[in-house]
Amino acid sequence: MDYKNIFSESNEGLMKIFINRPSKLNALNKETINELSSLFKEAENDTNTKVIIITGGGTKAFIAGADISEFANFNQEQGEKLSAEGHSLLFDLVENLSTPVIAAINGFALGGGLELAMSAHFRVASDNAKMGLPETSLGVIPGYGGTQRLTKLIGKGKAMEMVMSAGMITSDEAEKYGLVNYVVAQEELIPFCEKLASKIMRNSPVAISSAIKAINASTNSSVDGFKVEIEEFGSCFATEDFKEGTTAFLEKRKATFKGI
Ligand code: COA
Image (cartoon, rainbow, N blue to C red):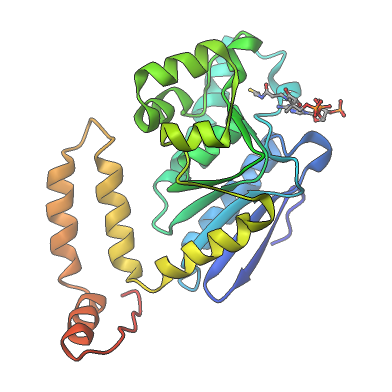
């Protein structure tokens, strides 16, 4: 499928998704959100895709936020709808995707951009990146999961400060807060994420998908994460990957996982 605001490259199980609206610093308009939603669903259903890296096209921005020009005239009802649709179309979708998603933050990750990075399973930033949730400076609050995911990732005090101050933090601060796992030079960002992806791809895709469900359950207060872990642990025993992984270990050879 052809997309206007994003493009992707796939090679040996790795899909790289680039946001491509450089003139608007990759701001997320409705069309881009729809395109991303559709591509993530496509990737999820493609068993050849083992890991996804999402990044911003160009060198300046990952995503500079939701497209402000699209909602500046919205009323209360439209604002609520914008937020709810964003959650289900993209941000919750990415968080709950069974294929691992790494956000490669290559520049500004603001508002909806940081919220999308926080929906990914983990994050790596380039040393020039700047991150923030500037919504209160626009008279609104983060509406794509930012108040919830930021708090869970960095704790209530730091989240309160970032949201209330509407300021930006550096990559080094983000690493210190636990918001990103690593900081690397900008030219190293994609190769570094590719190396992480190749480590992930050595392991069982079905076990990884179970792990995502169980770890996500730990931050969902409406489910018992321990119960989810027990169920997912048990379901692994019914897979060919489990048989292959344990047999390969006992036979002192490398496992070849089929993801079933
Ligand atoms: N929504 C819509 N357009 C945006 C945007 C956004 N979130 N972020 C940047 N743009 C557009 C700018 O309007 C500008 O478009 P124009 O050339 O047609 O005027 C273009 O992208 C380049 O941005 P500009 O502000 O000129 O770049 P800069 O280097 O001076 O500043 C930022 C970079 C990121 C600091 C600044 O663009 C910014 O503050 N953006 C908004 C961030 C924000 O509040 N995001 C949260 C939204 S909820």
